[in-house]
Each structure stands twice: as structure tokens, then as C-alpha cells.
Amino acid sequence: MTQTFYKKLPSVQRYNLNPLASIIFATQTQKMTIKAILSSPAYNTQTTIQGWVRTFRNEQFIAVNDGSCISNLQIVVDANSLNELDSKRVHTGTSIRVTGVLKPSLGKGQVVELIAEKVEILGECNPNEFPIQMKKHSLDFLREKAHLRFRTSTFSAIFRLRHLLSFAIHDYFHKNGFVNIHSPIITGSDAEGAGEMFTVSNFDLENPPRNEDGSINYQEDFFGKHAHLTVSGQLEAELAALALGKVYTFGPTFRAENSNTSRHLAEFWMIEPEVAFNDLNDNMDLAEDFLKHCIRFALENGREDLEFLQEREATEDKQKPIEERQTAPLIERLEFVANNTFERITYTEAIDILLNSNHYKKKKFKYPIEWGIDLQSEHERYLVEKHFKKPVILTNYPAAIKAFYMRTNDDQKTVAAMDILVPGIGEIIGGSQREERYDRLLEKCGQFNIPEESMWWYLETRKFGTCQHAGFGLGFERLVMYVTGMTNIRDVIPFPRTPKNAEF
RNA sequence: UCCUCAGUAGCUCAGCUGGUUAGAGCACAUGACUGUUAAUCAUGGGGUCCCUGGUUCGAGCCCAGGCUGGGGAGCCA
Picture 1 (cartoon, rainbow, N blue to C red):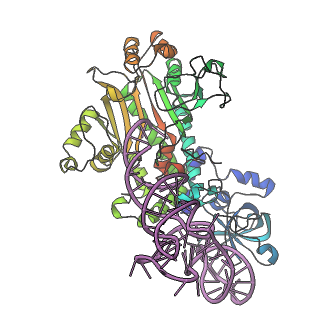
Picture 2: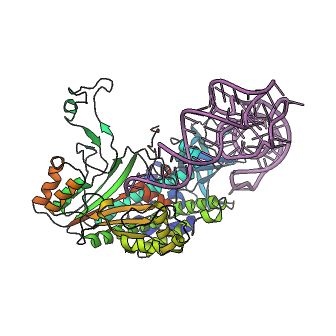
Picture 3: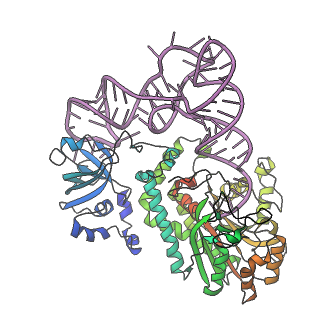
């Protein structure tokens, strides 16, 4: 496993994620990361490592992990390096510093091991209280120990991959000439229309100032109006795109929906590129290329962690009934997506496919299928998982079921929207070509009951040098879920915020 | 918010038709062993059976309400 990973070193170095970087550090301090040691063991040299004990076997072998990679380093101790008293203090979770000499391992499970000369116990870990043990814990249990779950192999792998994907996103946009825009987190715009919003206020909640009719007087609040946490940076991104050309946002987003599912969070991170002069096709090309880049980046730079998660998933799958198991191993699924063209069909074609499916004829769909109504999860899953068996981009939805800012097509019935659906997750990207025609946009505001005066700034961009433009939104956690194979969104963000839960 | 399943030792879970002192593996302690891979073997300690109320001679088990969590749906990214 380790071997195959490090054959891919050149690509790692290219992105300045060089595991050897700490060797330079080591010449001064003797301290090395386990990742650096395993990537090219400097046999017979004195080395110091620091990390957390995973297991202590046979009172002779300590498996240590320092978070630099998924693999542990085996430490070999004896009475000289670790006295009996200290030996009793070494438990799973204990932090230690070990100095010794690297030798080829005599055992089978690893190529290199550190023959300890000195073991220092830095932080004890009472095993009667420490909940993380070297055995299988349920993800469910670990979710309640989110402050300690980083110590597990699974979560350290997930969060290293999350970092890689975050880096991949900035890398992609930067290399393609995009400008990163920090859209506001607090917004005074009350017409976002993308869901329930959290109020931001510094009022005394027990006794807020009130108007004569009893309603709360937000004019006296901090911002002089009713302010919220953002539910999307898109509108602001559009403003920037209509000057900078290509922009993207990547920041936290908040939805106060009472959603209790494995795919929703109250606080999540969203990526929203927006490109001037792009039409719907350009938008699809961008989204597909971008998604593939992120997946390839993870495959190239996070191979070892992906292999671990793949194995974990396979073990889990063995417990499940056959129909619930994954169709292919994780890495194979990712490679398939990275190397195949996404299917592109219109909403109307999708409805036809569904209506002509055997699944429909056998009445296996719970919800009705009819042009004009939104597709249900079961319909999307059928298209992606059964019919096409690959990511699908659905376009040109009926105007009534999509947002006000999407561009009306020439048929006057549909809008230039696109959703990218992937197996297992469902909708991962939603986007559109935006309505750039002032009159049309004004009309849409009316139809959607969005007060013109609250959108004056957005409308003005259509008055002053308007142009065709398009963009999309990608839920970052959904991308991390897809790449790691995790099936619950709460397991791909360090501290999930969901209804009734803001612990840590 | 709706549907559905669950809550028993630090963790994973068993617990029969309601019946006497609630079990196993892991973890922990003590000892043995010492090139182990979640080491192994022996012995030992460890329980608010989610909470409240009810039915019953008797409730971990049945009933009602609540809390928490999982899965699915809606909303969506």
C-alpha cells in the first residue's frame, strides 16, 4: 500500500505537498514526521518522532501515529528505552516522543521500524476514560465524540482528503484565471429565496425594541435592518463576475431549514463560480472539468487515504444485503467518473426516459412523473444509478420549479438550468445561465414576489453593461462525501451543525 | 416536519412466552509469555437496562407520553 503511494511522489511534489519537506527540518531538530520516514527511510540514522499511541503490543511494540499519514510507525522498546513504571503508562491515545535508530523491520507488517533508545511520555491517557480504542467504533458513536474522532484512522483520512479537495478547488480556479471573491457572511438582503435564514442581531432577545404594531423594530438593530447569515454568495459573485470576468466564492453557508437527513447541514461550505459571457453549455463544460479535476487531484495526492477508506467501505459492505452494496470499489468509481464524459440530457428527455422505463410500467415509482413537476429522489436515482450508470447533467427545467434568476429559454416554458446528479449523493451541483435581460428579470421578480426595491443593486447590473453569464453552486461536503465514500454528511465536516446540535 | 427502526457494562452487541443472582467479546487490573500486527492465555473488577408514568404478585421485556440517535422522505447544496 505504502509502496504504490510513494511511486506517485512527483505529483505530490508538484503541489508543494512534499512529504520530504520535513527532512530539511529534521537536520536541525532530529524530529521527523512518520510520512517522511516511511517515504524514504534513512536507515541507521538517529531519529525523533512524536505522536499518539495506537496500540502497545506484547509490551514490546508501540504503533504510533502522528497524523502526517494513515500509516503508523512501529516502535520497538525494551527495558532500557522504557522502564517498567513508564511502560504501564503507555496506552492507546498517550502522546509520546521517541528517539532511536531506524532499522529494516524484522516483522512482517512494515518495512521500517524505530528501535527506541528513549521513550518520553508527553501526555498520559487514562484508558478507563478515553473512549477511542483500537477497535471498530460505529461512526454514530464517534459523531458524539467529534473532539476525539480525529484520532481514528478513518477520520484522519477523511480530513486529509477534505484538505486536499479544498486545495484542489483553489488550485483549479487559480490556474484557470478565476478571482476568489469573499462574499459576505452577514447579509441584509431579504430576498435570497434559497431557504430559511438565521437572523443576525445584537438585540436583547427578551426585550427587543418594538414598533407600534408590536412587530420588532429592526431599524434599531446593529445593522439598521433585519440581517441574516448568508444562504448563498451567488448574487454577490454575479456582481463581481460582471467586471472581473471569472470569479468564484468558497465559504461557509447557513440554512435554518429543519432538515434531518444524511445530506444536509445547517452550516456547510459552498463553492460558487460565476463567469461572464458563458452560456449554459460553457457552464456545463466548466462544471464537468472542475469536478473531474478535483477527483483526479484526490486520486493523485490522497491515494493511501483513499485505499484505506476503500477497504473500510468494503468491510462495511460485507455486513449489508447485496442490493445495498457499492457497485464497484471506491477508487474504481472515482476513476470511472474522472475518465468518462457526463451524460447530458434535458429535463423533458429525462421525463420521457422515466415514463418509458420498465420501472415505471411496473409501477415501482412511489411519486408521479409528469412534465412540469420536480423530479423526486427516486427518479434522480433511477436515471443515474440504473439507466445511465454515470453522472448525468439535467438541463432546461420548467421555469416554475426553478429560481427567479435563471434565464428564460426561447420556448418561454423552461429555463437554462442545469443540475449534476451523481450516484449515491444525488444532486451535487446546481447552476444556470442567469437572466441578463433587465425587463425579463424584473418580470421574474414580480412572478416570484421578490420586492424590486430590495434587489435594486442586482437589477442595476442588468442596466449597466449587462451580458450573458452563468455559474453554479457545489456543496463542498457533498464533494467530500463523494470522494471519501462516506454516506453521512456529518462525517465529512469536523463539527457538524444540524438541528438540535451545535456541540463543540 | 413526516414515516420507520433503535436506546442494556467505557465500546460492539445478546437477553426466550413477563419469572429468581442481566451475559459475551473488546477495553481495564493482576499474572504468564516475549518479533508482535486490534498479539495470545488465565484470573478479576465493572450495570440509573434512556427518562417519566401505568398494567402486573412480578417489567430490560407489555402499554402511554417524552428525550436522544440511525435510516428513508420533504426542502435543498
